[in-house]
Length: 319
Picture 1 (cartoon, rainbow, N blue to C red):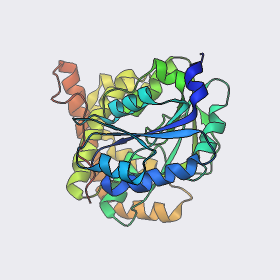
Picture 2 (cartoon, helix red, strand yellow; picture 1 turned 30 degrees about the vertical axis):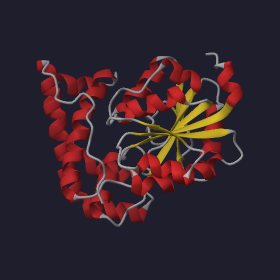
Picture 3 (cartoon, helix red, strand yellow; picture 1 turned 90 degrees about the horizontal axis):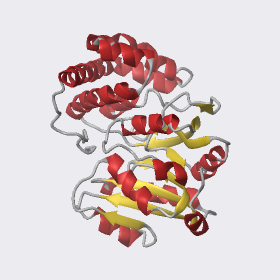
Picture 4 (cartoon, rainbow, N blue to C red; picture 1 turned 60 degrees about the vertical axis):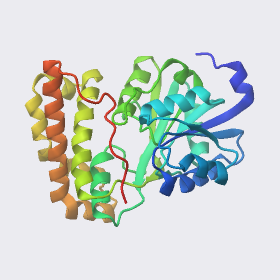
């Protein structure tokens, strides 16, 4: 594991931000990253593929930010790969356009990355739009494995989210994100472990995320997340994954366990827990759509029927 000497001389950090129709969030996101990078030799790289003027907005507002404008839409995984390939830092962090990072984000990620044997580190996700009911329901289901807490950092206990993740350059020289917009971070985390690096997850490093809004979007997005889950079950050598792959109907039992699991993750955060319990009926409905998506995709995979979209691109968040 030898770092590229030429890149090492240039910059300590690169932060890569995939962007698609992100005009309403990207300015706040970049400003938060700039605050976190103060005192570091660093750069910000945005990979923008919507063609809606967001690239020009970034160039006007942040002349120092490098914008890689793409002629066609690319998945989140492909955008991260493009940004990493152009990045000049020896350490590379990733955040999404609809997130705000804390002021000590880079400092805390860097401290964890100095742990021997650790190839990638990441943190948890908080919610920026808790008053929107559908947005809150999406948050409880999408990030139930990454709620903020005061627990200590742990190795290899959780996959890392692409919107709150940092790696050594050498990791990205060997491993790329899958060309997907859902579950790409699960597959990326698994590939890092398979190459012999440790993952470190620290739930006290909290990014704030603006969640998708609208009840139709809520149901459709849960179904897409379910379809994406089928693909990471293929590569994860877990007892549950083996059972689900062998008996896809198990997926339909998921709503029976979702309320206890989310409640346990929110224990001690009483305001969030009460909010979830109030929304639990719609969360169960959303998880049912997730289960149906997982079941259908597993059956399709068993029949070796190609899917219409290999990237599982969801529609952008709507206000």
